[in-house]
Amino acid sequence: MTALLVALGAAIGAPMRFLAGHHLDQDFPAGTLLVNVAGSFLLGLFSALSLAGDQMALLGTGFCGAFTTWSALAVKATERGWRGGTAYALISVVGAVAACSLGFLIGQS
Image (tube, rainbow, N blue to C red):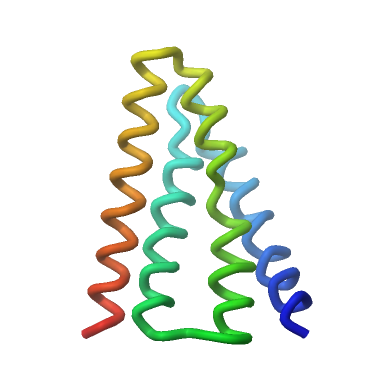
């Protein structure tokens, strides 16, 4: 049952990630940045709410796991060259960690 919940969450998260990247990644990969920051916020929130078991399988592992994307971040950073790629990677990582922390803080209140 858990694997089906992960697959269901991923079936929703992955197309959303694709659409955001497809429509928003132009000169700057804003779609990839957006999904990584938003997904990190949600995962922080879900963690603070102590979701576990089936809920975390569906929302955390399935949806957030498929919605966020480390591999696309790496590709987009590489495409931007050394300086631009490093800046993009730093913005992405710092933004995602900050968003996760914010989601966790909101979930605890």
